[in-house]
Amino acid sequence: MLGGIGVGKTYIGALLEEHGVTMISADRIGHEVLLPGTPVHAEVAERWPAVVIDGVIHRPSLAALVFSDADALGELEAMTHPAIGAEIERRVAGMEGLVGVEIPVAKDVVGRSWPRVVVTAPLEVRRRRLLERGMTSRDIEARIAAQLTTDAWQALADYVVVNDGGDGLAADVEQLVAWLEEVVPVRR
Image (tube, rainbow, N blue to C red; front, side):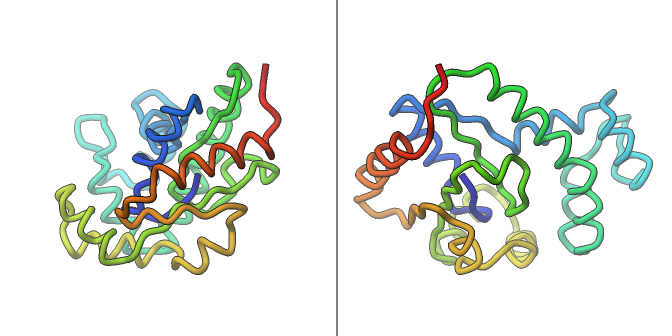
């Protein structure tokens, strides 16, 4: 499941879990690959030593650095995405039933043969959600500017869920689950 920041991927993921879909968060795995002692931690610490505080990568400092510099973001993704993808593949290999992966980027972190479900939401809804999370307007705009437009996300999609806060979301997720059951071979 793909989509920009603030579209509600995590919320949709929770609804999918209610329907028996096992969800994996690429963002959580991204946190794990940056932990001290990992190869990715060492790479990031070597490249940007100023973001390391007491041996730990300070994620807000790293985010401020890379979301204001497309080249730096590309470097970080080149360091983290292979490790994140490998861990997702490892976890999925041991699971049964439908598995969904929440991925906040448009890059192929996992196999392209996987169906791409894209979650979208109007920009004003996304901004409100992010402000409620405690992000500053400046950080919100930098993150949104670093990501694809809604049209570009939709162009990647095999299936689109619009999460605008409307009443029809539960029914939309039920339709998504039915579609997934048709197109994804269930692991047993």
